Image (tube, rainbow, N blue to C red; front, side, top):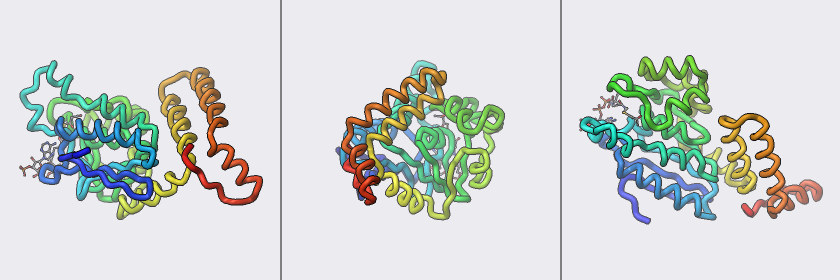
Length: 254
Ligand code: CAA
C-alpha cells in the first residue's frame, strides 16, 4: 500500500510508522490520519508484524493542522475528529509504542496517549495547548489523560495549556520512559516484546484496556475467558514445555 504522509518500515517483526510532514512539524491533517487508519488495518492483519512503533523525525507531532480547522462548522468538526482512528490504535491487537522527540502537542500528544507506551527525549516538549486556540483536546485527550496522570494534573495541563518536558512528564506518568535517543530505546524494547507470545500479548492487552472502563467483576470474568483461550495456542504449550525441559522457549506467535 502506498502512503504520502507517513513512512512505514518493517524489520525484525517491528513496523515503524514515521509521521512525515516535517515542514509543519508533522501537524496532523485529515489525509495523514486517514493514512494512519489504513496503516493500522494493514499492520493489525500482518502476521509478520508483532510490534508497532510510531515516531516522527525531529518532532513527533505539533497537533492537528490548525490551518484546516479555522473555518470548520460544528458538523465539519465532528467529521474532522481523529477519535475513531486513535481508538483503532489503542485497540490494535499488537503492542504500540510512541517514540517522542521534539514537539508532541495537542492531537500529537493524544496520538501518543493512544499507544501502550511512550518513550520520550528528556527535552521533548509535550502538552495540550488547545485551550490557547479556544478549544480543548478532542481526540481522546480528556479521557485518556486523566486515566494516566489523574484528574487534577489532567485538568491543570488541559486548562492551562502548559508545555512540559521529560522529567515532569515522567514524574506525572504522561510518559513512562526517558532516553536521549528515544527511537533506539524504543526499538530495543520493541525487540523484547516481539519475542513474546503474540496471542498472550493481544489477549492481555484486551483485558488491561478493559480494566480502565469496566467494573472489576466484568473485568475478571473477561480475564478468565481470555486466559482459558490461551490454552488453545501452541505458544502456551511451547512456553510450559520449555520450562519443564529447562530451555528457552521459541514462540511462533500462534
Ligand atoms: N498546525 C498547522 N501548522 C503548524 C502546526 C499546527 N498544529 N504546528 C506548527 N505548524 C507549522 C507552522 O505554522 C510553521 O509553518 P510555516 O513555516 O509555514 O510558517 C511550521 O510548522 C514551523 O512552526 P513554527 O515556525 O511555529 O515553529 P516554532 O519552533 O517557532 O514553534 C510550536 C513550534 C510551538 C510547536 C508552534 O508551531 C505551535 O505553537 N504550533 C501549534 C501547536 C498547537 O496549538 N497544537 C494543537 C493543535 S489543535 C489540536 O491538536 C486539536 C485536537 O485535539 C485534535
